[in-house]
Length: 165
Length: 206
Image 1 (cartoon, one colour):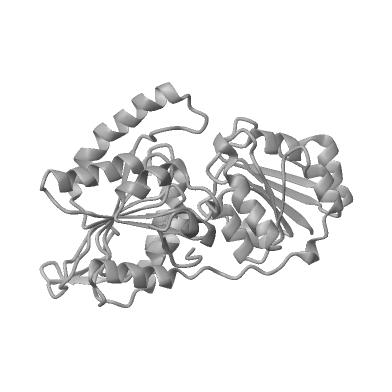
Image 2: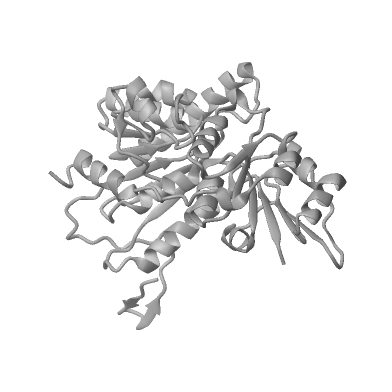
């Protein structure tokens, strides 16, 4: 079973949910060999009707205590550009497509997506270019993402508060 | 979870995360006030800190259920893993967001003032040693409240702002404001360190 996981974190991203659940785009997933699509819709107002046929399942939910399981089971993750979603996905070594929400203030999310794309860790697009990207992208070309180093932060903070000289 | 024996009643008490046994041998206790719009990021940072950073007070937007769950998960896991005899104490406080996504600017003035009105008594009551924040909007009232504590001579609070890993070349609005109000302003990409020499660059820390 090949599955794709769409996540918007704690935000609402109706355009993305509408896009991925549109009939012609469900067809694209199907043609790429996916037989399961899971939508985590957060605060969104658009709630697609879940369904399950012999060949394809669409699951929809707002939140879970942890997305670990869905990320683990996914063969592809399509995410809003939230730092949390991106980092969790990249650290699990899952192929990631980041969809930028053009309606957000100043659209700063592009910076991270662009930088990580430049460094070869993910693909990025907008809702309108997502269907095209899904069909043209080459997932094995993505690089493995090295984890950050929070111990550098704790060492710094220990010095600041005087726990360390 | 650690168990404690209640000698009076001869039974085992299972502590809830909010119960605390103070270890009187602890020399340094740092009350930590945490405000993270980017919850996963801030929890990574808190996760790297030693148990000396206790108690931890998390401030989240009242509409944010996902963050509360993440915080509880994080703290439970940590309490299980921690081999030290001290119980780890944390609290979650909620204040309204200063600004919802796409909220018009005029109403933002009022909602920010409302957040300020609620933030100051909270910060005044907690009197943290350290404020750690990384997020949009709601951290401004918290940091301003912390600054006020210092100005009013009540307590000097160290304010540490960590700009989100999302910010590669430009600062967030909160970042631009807190660059001047914080004691330490941490950035995670070299382009920002170049633009803002006052900032601290430690590499990618989340």
